[in-house]
Image 1 (cartoon, rainbow, N blue to C red):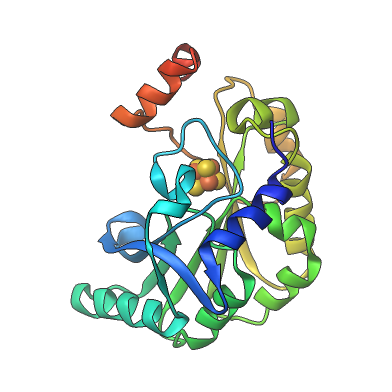
Image 2: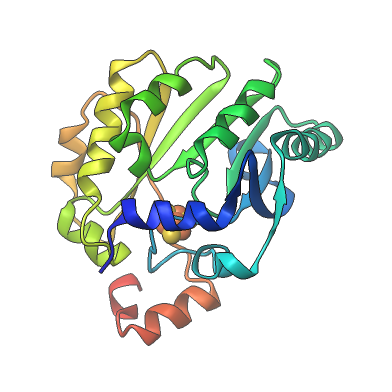
Length: 228
Ligand code: SF4
């Protein structure tokens, strides 16, 4: 088992160089009604159901370094071509590399909404990061919980801790004026306690897709039965 904070630091050493960050793909996707997407490299969790492969597990050997300007230009080109008004980063954890992310957000024009999809680990451990993010009006944060309690979090991610960081991320976000919602990945049938805990916040349940590589990973771990 690993500590997500230690893993964040190790991952940052691999995927960040000054204000550059590693990405491996730029694409248009249908999510949110159409959104320009930059797929980044590196994550501070190892969710067993994760659709990302090498970008999470093999960050050393995938992707290339991009400046915030280069990322923005790629996203803008896709958005303009497709008539999209939204942008996001997927494939890994976008909050790794704070300077890179903040620099990118500063460059995004008001006509675009940036949807920050995050596991919230780093937003729960550093209030000042959330404060920095609250400066942007065209930002929506989607915090995706991996499990509805600490035990399920550890089962789904293989991490020894981290659920409490996700909870603290929500507390930190509530303290500032920022748009956010919660997504929950769970294999439990009863997650009412989780819903009750966040009674005034919009919560969506995120589906787990058993892509062949995900199925293979779960099979190898002998836990596919929990996900079917
Ligand atoms: S937090 Fe997201 S990108 Fe990271 S391992 Fe989990 S599902 Fe994959």
